[in-house]
Image 1: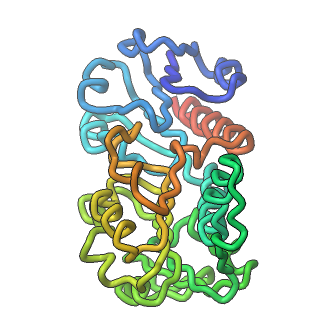
Image 2 (image 1 turned 135 degrees about the vertical axis):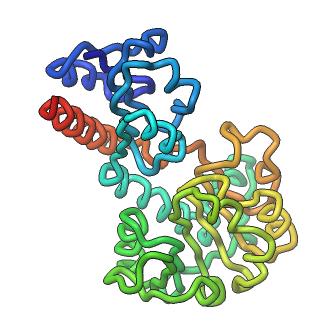
Length: 291
């Protein structure tokens, strides 16, 4: 069988997969592929699926499958899986780094120093200890973030439509999370229900001066509403690794005050790429064993 690696992975992954079939990174051979392996860049939609008549298995290296037309794939008898266990630590560490950077004014301090300014009296800091972190979603990444937040003396609360109790956080309604949190970190899949959920109406329910972190999916946030809230001071900060459109050309966040932006690097650690490789090999091995 032909295995198509459609995105960039660790350099040794093709060699590791050769035990199960021929491996290619040539997208022009999609029509021959029985397995397609992607990350976030390649979208596996109807056109790609129709161009791959031999396709039986799609692996998404990472969290979520919103870049794949799962219903259409399944209608064609194509199985779709992801590797959510691989990326949890990497993304949680980025979310925590963002949360710590905002109240410490690290970005403004670094930029001003390089501009020859000495803003010792201008840049005030606040501490994480004693503050409340609200998690929207309590999956693997959120639970890893909760561990780190508690280590810094934070109270952790959470809302998840599908979870009533969790050892990681005090579960409560979404409105209570909005009202009680000093920081809100978003960890939801992108669905019709969650698309645009962080909007002007939601922000109005939040504690004034809250800071928001988004490392899940860009379209969960209405960027224009967040930028307006940053401009008015309703939000004290917004840190994001994901965007409505990537790269985020023309995004209002680029010019908004107190916005910390990174180029979708949450899963881009050397350790995570190793874990991704292990997970992908395990899934291909299991698929091959059933043939």
